[in-house]
Amino acid sequence: MKYAAIITYTTGERTGATVSANGLEAAWEKVFDLFPKADVRAVELAAILTQERDRK
Image (cartoon, rainbow, N blue to C red; front, side, top):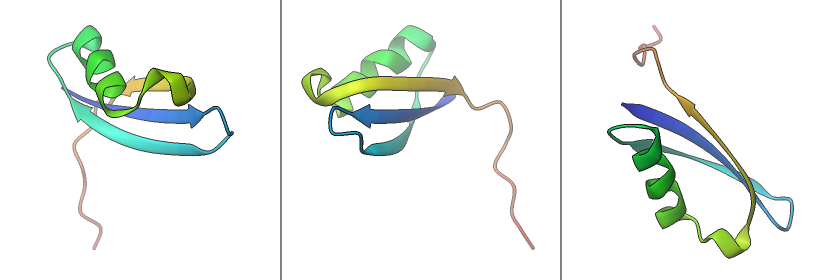
C-alpha cells in the first residue's frame, strides 16, 4: 500500500513524501528512516486509497 507523509520540521518548514509499505507500522519505519527524528516536530501519515489519474 502507498502512504502519504507530511513532515513538519522543528523550524516550521514542511515537506512531503510517499512511501510504499506492507502496513502502517512499516510505513512509519520507512518515514523515520527518511527523516531523522531529531529534526522532526510532527508527522501526518495517511493511506492513499485511490489510483493516480491522468489529467487530459
